[in-house]
Image (cartoon, rainbow, N blue to C red; front, side, top):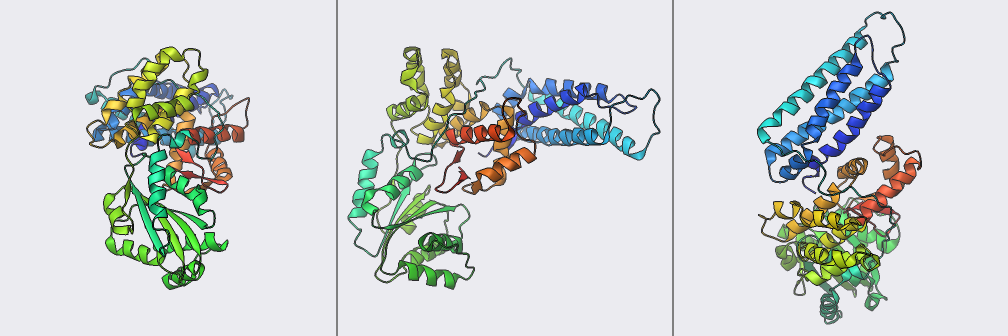
Length: 476
């Protein structure tokens, strides 16, 4: 999400505020009264914190506010590092007489002074923005450790039966050709990847070798070729010579039936698309069926051998079906009161399956009518309304879901931004990185690993992460 860097400021501020309180209780000080400094610093943070709800909301469309939040975020990291340094280099003051002043202590005192002045400046710079103070968050924080699976469920493809039948009919009508390329195109979050998964798993292709390639915004023909080679040969291919890639693809394609999914193609350059198309045509006597997902009709037209299929938005009733499933709606005792509100929320999903799934997961832990009303009335539904496509509905739903996260979960999700979209992340490695960086909330009940596992389940449930086919997770 484009603006998570701005709105993550509140998560860092909340964690740093707790860190300052912990430092105060631990009585970190030298011969200077650092506790007093920390208390003043925390007071400045509290002043800013009360305004962050409005600031984060406005940062979506106001670049100046976004820059201000970015400065606040960077300063929070610096303060956190400073406190860590103090805890390493300082012992509680138990001596009655002052020890000799040394250079290290002077540096620490100067750093504290600089941080206080920096934070004071940021707090003062908020004044021209005239932020509105919020008494309570508009979307309650939720806690949920529901398990999720990699399987495509019925609700994920609700309302898409006709689409699948049409796509399969088109493929079946041209399946005798050596190469068939059918693009599926539509705006982000509409369900293109899910539709491709259905084709991938269809029994019609049970006699085909199946390959799934995530292409991504960075087009790399060698990488695509090596992925195909690796999956067909069960060996890790890392050829750097394009000719070697082509030779191996040709060898593996020859005389074979192969289904290839090329998911999330962004490349607009006609020459590169033609080279991709040529690579798929390699292999004497082969029968290659390729399904390509893309947001751009231009790309779909350039790569196709069959008329591209445009995936259109779902009906409001289908979005409501998805939300009902995600919230276990029928089991709720107050579902009669919630139904009208829920249907109104479904309309705001704009026919986007991803929006309905994300909002449904968030609503699962909201038990009261007031909580559902707060989601329905959130300004996030309207803040991006100036955009011309329905994609702003997905953006709004994901922002709402993000706002419902706890501070530590926001930080862990923010860390995932260091990985490119579609990157496969080892679950165990991600957990250890979160723990090593101190991003996991301390708990007396659960271990850091257990807490991290619940974070991953939560991010999967909200569609911020997704399961690939191996024992890793990928950034959605």
